[in-house]
Image 1: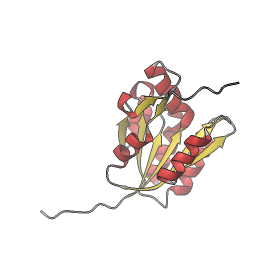
Image 2: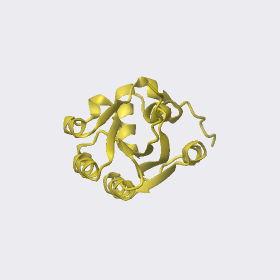
Image 3: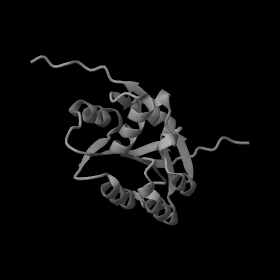
Length: 163
């Protein structure tokens, strides 16, 4: 049997608030953060990254984090007025004709209709989330589930600013 090169283009769209809340609950630590350097290669599994977008409600997004996502993955952080649901869904719909696979990092059942729509458009849809905080209906709709475990986050030590 000959080696077959599978060349897939993948977009990773992260519902930042949902993932952060999930890992904070699981780690019982508000300073837990996703280790993208560990998680992204695992999610891609040799496939090509088309884009990585981190949607987050609120203004308190670390500039250092945004810079790091951009430098390492040409990723971007999109601040959202309320939840990430609508901006993430719009972006996923826009990307549907440009990628083979969309990985949604969220366990939120609000994305069930989006997953069904993307699949109907011929896109493979994978979910990456903490299993305990992932809606069963979302799991059943997706093509594949990547479980985010304690190996995929770290506790941010940071430095305290002096006054």
